[in-house]
Image 1 (spheres, one colour):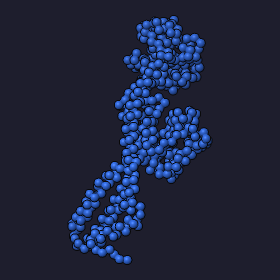
Image 2 (tube, helix red, strand yellow):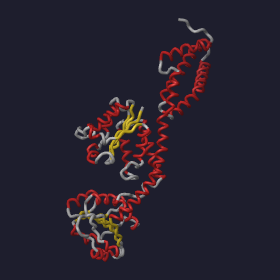
Image 3 (tube, helix red, strand yellow):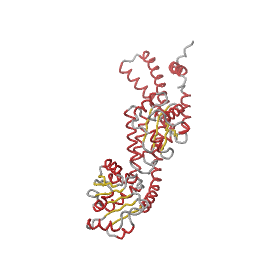
Image 4 (tube, helix red, strand yellow):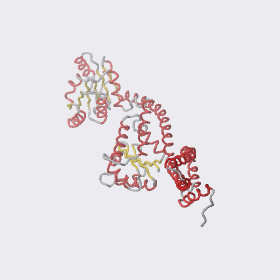
Length: 446
């Protein structure tokens, strides 16, 4: 049994390709995949930043071809995915220990676009849950993903990797949170309707701020964001009244000159009667005149300020990431040992069955000659089983331990050779001749 992962992420594939192959409902894909002969278990992780298939297989090459075929055809909604040559530079593959390490790093948010972001753990849990519900995830991948979730929890509890935001929008919201003890009764004004405004809206909502107004030149775009986030939509002509009512002003709108000038800010502050106003200016050119810095109760940050904080936070996260990688390495080795030990299970089972067959056969031949009653017969059965278990205990424990090391495979092969586990006829001959020779009788003659 081998682990195999084939996938693409934000570093290897462009967004349009990831969007094209994203899977909202993994059930049909997974059921079709495990119905074939190439794959025994499977989990599909599909997010905005990655599309990855993790499988357990007995036929590694056949599984590789099947997964690549799936990326070319089955994942695309129209059944016509990218050509093979377009996929070559986008897909990556991992096997066994590398699969373990990658899954643990993904769940721990060490492979994310923003290291430490919390969303991927929930997405990985959803992916595993979907695989379980459709019958595609079995005990091996179940153990792997549960181990990954536990590793992610350990990373978050033992490091500070997720404490300091690195996106400009999140930095801005965290700064606002430092000025205002609580967002529960605060109001925000967002001017613009682009991607940065949307990210800031999402961050403000996540921080608990409920009263949000969106103003934009194009009313339709403001309305779209307002509906999505439960805000109110406004035109730019309403800005004077909106500013006076806003505790947080976040602006990112085009224009040659700042619209938030010192006179505009002064009028707003007179209406606010000493309540502070936090201004986040991420416009290029700047939307807020730096002259407003001289005003009391105004806290202005522009893009350079936020970028410097984000870079400082990113450096701190990189230091925390080094500690997190040590945790992942240790947890990978733990799982790797468990997975490697599975190689010993078939040999151990066959050896036990082989020895038990000899024991049962010899007891069955001896009992009629001994003339024992029921209780005595049970005693002989228990005695011989105990002897077999004691004899096998140390060798089987050693086989399990050695199987966790790569060179331990030689011990498994030697065991199979010594006990003829791969030769049923020879094993059967051993079982039939052991009894008469042990009893002191002459071997049967042909």
